[in-house]
Length: 245
Image (cartoon, rainbow, N blue to C red):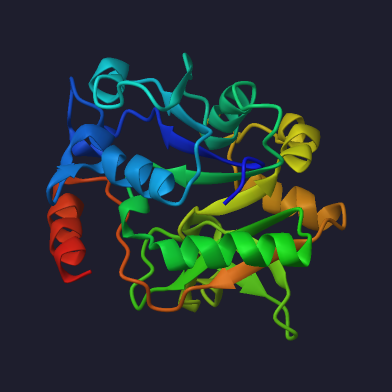
């Protein structure tokens, strides 16, 4: 991959359900190494050099693992994923035109093949942004990808907002994106605060993109072995999956 592609890793969250008071959850071990290291090493192996890691809660536990080779952006107030990306984008090199955005607690499951397909599709289609979708037999807690009869994305609906019919959808958004930097600079400032949580969500960019007739594409990865890690139980499940992978 060339110098015009960068990456932002979101690693600032408190991970309240993990009940870890002094260590950020991305510093916890998954298989043979901390979760965040899986992601950084994976990106570097794919020749992505411009990597910004967003830190916040227990930032030292993350920063000491990544001594050199990445840039840190501190999210002093945890105001959601869109706010985190806004914090990071200021740190990207001016050469970067397309940027991957990944979560530090689940991206160990992505392969080079999948990320390369995502990047290549995004560039080939000249999309404003492209995001990965996966199929989950039990999509509990995940945002459902709603499409029209022709397969065009209409929305990503969070479970708490989904209708009974939408909750039956098994195609979900695991939050793996590649954006044009110009798109982010134009629309991040237009993301509205959630009236429920007071946070700014990256998924709001999907609605903004659709309403403004921007080109949004997806890459369907099917039944990819994947696990978001928010609790100790999910960490144990992720350990089993990573070994299977």
